[in-house]
Amino acid sequence: MARILIEGGIPLSGEIAVGGAKNAALPIMAATLLCGDPIRLSNVPRLNDVETMQKVLRALGGTVAWEGPHEMAITCDGGIKEEAPYELVKAMRASFFVMGPLLARLRRARVPLPGGCAIGVRPVNIHLKGFEALGAKVSIDGGFAVATADRLQGARIHLDFPSVGATENLMMAATLAEGTTVIENAAQEPEIVDLADFLNAMGAKVQGAGGPTIQIEGVRQLRGVSYRVIPDRIDAGTFLVLGAMTRGPLVIKDAQPAHQMAVIAKLQEMGATIDVQGDRMTVEARGRLRGVDVKTLPYPGFPTDMQAQITVAMCLAQGTSLVTETVFENRFMHIAELVRMGANLNIRDRTVVINGVDRLIGCPVSASDLRAGAALVMAGLVAEGRTEVGNVFHIDRGYENLVERLARLGARISRLEEPATPPDHSRR
Ligand code: EPZ
Image (cartoon, rainbow, N blue to C red; front, side, top):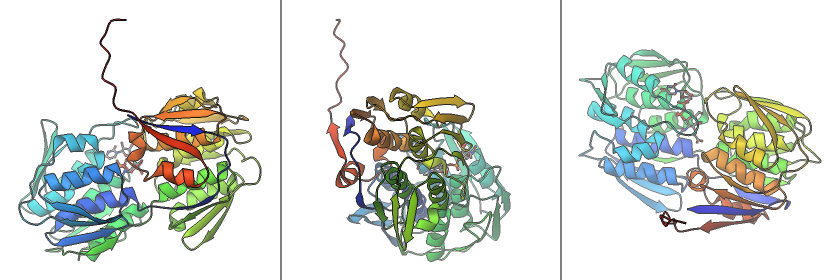
């Protein structure tokens, strides 16, 4: 098991490059199942979740290979299987995104129901209801979601919640359906727009992505394409918050600033200054940040994937802050760890009340999910003394070379790979 060791309190400054968006690359990789031609993707981040999606595509019969540091070649020609492997879908919820493409391509799909995770139960009812609306017969069989259809028919689908994954799964399924599909109350995240742009590059007819209503006119076939994935707005947002916390100046390049206006606005409200020049953002803060209130919402609201990170910034800010999590029911696993570092936090239902303190004290902490892990690393960077972050595998799912990039900014940080110690059964 790996751990990250940090000596906190070192001022950070310099320049970091943002990687490709994990949450765009994963659905786009799933969408390659929609056609049999060779596809080339660029700006794909080297993350564990991306490697898992590669394994899923190979298990389904696709050929997938890295062709460069961030370039990938995928061909899902002939012999595509209808059943996704149980252990891989359990390992990564986003594997469920293959259900829409398999149903569209093969007219049947058998995909394990993804389990919940630390942040919530995360059901897929909205996905399954949408497949039924498209004319599929859907059932649950031994932990698998099973869908079959003679032919998918375009339909008007209203989502109970603007689910990112459901919007993506249904958009992909609808590209090869007969007739026109309208998805209402669709998710509006930039990753939805990136998937729609990828599908249209393959010859699909998707309109309205990025807004609440998406229209997809079914086509008979899609073709191979080369495509570049957008920058990761959560990777960029994480470093924006870090730059504000550590005063900076921190330059974040290869970003798409238009995708993180909510985070930029909130940090400016806290007293940071953020200068945007093209794909570069320079963040700095003179003096202590001010505490503010935040409520996470579907895009373009403040992203839930930035909730843990902004909470850390508020732990040391002046005054009292409220952070309300409206998207997931259990995304406060980092709070107890921050309290152990000396933060003054209380949870009231779905809101954390944060009373700013003058300092955090380093100690051993454990990551519970991807973004909580990143937040604990950020806390360690500003805490006094030494912090050890455990369960680093969570962080590896969504941040490429996080330790190396932080070290380049001046952080005293290292990664300790420890062999998994066999359980000690000896009687003491
Ligand atoms: C995507 O997850 C992202 N993952 C998540 O990022 C992100 O936090 C989330 O969207 C919200 O923005 C990927 O894109 C791979 P949802 P997804 O469906 O699609 C409920 C990260 O850190 N819901 O929008 O699973 C659900 O329980 C990850 O990179 C249903 O009730 O999120 C949740 O409360 C974490 N029924 C809410 O909707 C459904 O059928 C939002 O979920 C589907 C969702």
